[in-house]
Length: 336
Image (cartoon, rainbow, N blue to C red):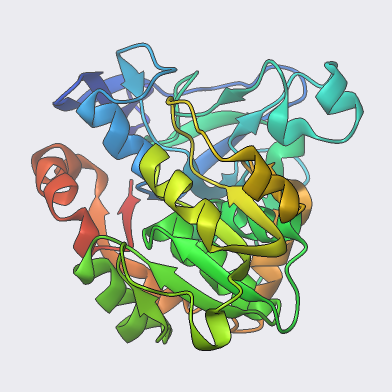
């Protein structure tokens, strides 16, 4: 909430691993040149937020206002009152990646809620170029766009198309996003996860019925020659390595998750497949627009994605429980 009399707002701050608090902070009254003030409407809780709380994020300094899956309303100017999706990747605009049209992998990127304070609050300043019109979407739908755009970007990077056999390892929110957009591209999509609860959600909420556990014997029948693309959304080096033998000749492994470990594979097996390993990082404006188009057309089951909505000030007392129960949740949304 905001207090106009004192010019303050409530913010959710991770003070240190395991400690989340509501802090009163100044309500931004102005934005730097080229930036825009946005009143936050809804925030999605991401795996990144869980990792920050657990002390597992490698690029973060505490304390930090978390939250980067954001929707909100433009405060001032010609677009005042417009509902927008926030692209949380603040790029420098001048490095080689940015000059080549790849701001998602800017060499000096700052992600809201990670490298700089995020949007788990009432108002935030964002570069104007990072705001995309959310016409036709609800506030909660608009807050779901960012995480789905990561999956859409991975599918775009893979060149997956009609008739391809796809395996997504890791059936959390990012994996589900990749699976949804691989299916929309016409692929036959299989999902694998250690958690039966996550596989049950994938079946019951999203109608994925080709479900597997690690160690299952997959390479027989239609799958005898392997998958045309394997998307890893596990965050596990062991899972990534276990996916290489499941790759068909001419196929691609797409690394959506990030691990700090070294990844190894057998060179002769890799070469005889003429395989590709593709890193997929963040998302581009075109991916955000692709997701919003799919939402407007009803191709993305947003009601199934939204597991629960929580008031911002209730989050500190609820967060530990969400962390413990996350394999039974797809997307928890927060409203300020």
